[in-house]
Image 1 (cartoon, helix red, strand yellow):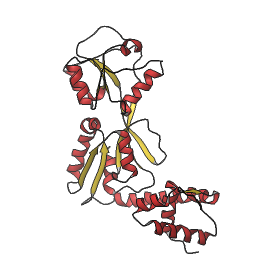
Image 2 (cartoon, rainbow, N blue to C red; image 1 turned 30 degrees about the vertical axis):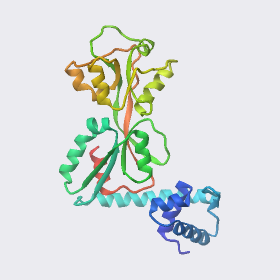
Image 3 (tube, rainbow, N blue to C red; image 1 turned 180 degrees about the vertical axis):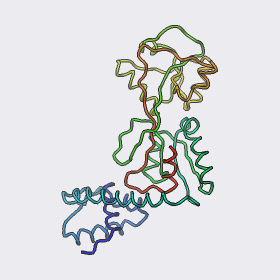
Length: 287
């Protein structure tokens, strides 16, 4: 039996994507090279690993069994490579990360500054997108680390919580009234766009109490929400931790709710089946 590690890596990618074409794209090789590697592997093991279909492939029982063990073995190899990478200081490389505008400005920027101080020869590339778009960028290999609003459920990525935040409603003027969820749902509200994970979380919380939030104004960034509240355009739903300066200077005031919105988490994510570069590993260490 003369099976090489590269064949197992190709098999693992094909098993994860259930597509020879996607595996080829992710591995930067031709589809014929993937097909040949799988054919050779099946011949060496004397078993069928995939059932070919018109749209992609599915794993046989033997293929499923092999994937479990190969995935674990490759993970061990990756961990060993990562530990070796930690022994060396970064003198070159590239850090590719993605996050939303709010997270970039209020959470990630200090870590970027520190990273640049420690590893000035590493090029930093950062893109700003929504959480859902960040996940797509991870899957297409355009970024290595993505910062996203949780919860997100996707078996292809590994997610680690790194920050807890609280969604609150604020207004321009201080109020003594304590609002019920129903009270606040009838107010003039300034909210993020419905496609954002932050908005979805708040919408779901109100929906769990049989209430529908209707926005009078929808905006695309957290900074605009704060400006809208400061200009008395309505009661804005903002992240408390990212609004502390405005609260401290009394530019806006937090509205007290009888049932505060539960805390939620921010996390960083990366593809489970891919090895992170030393630059990405060092940045995660800082976080």
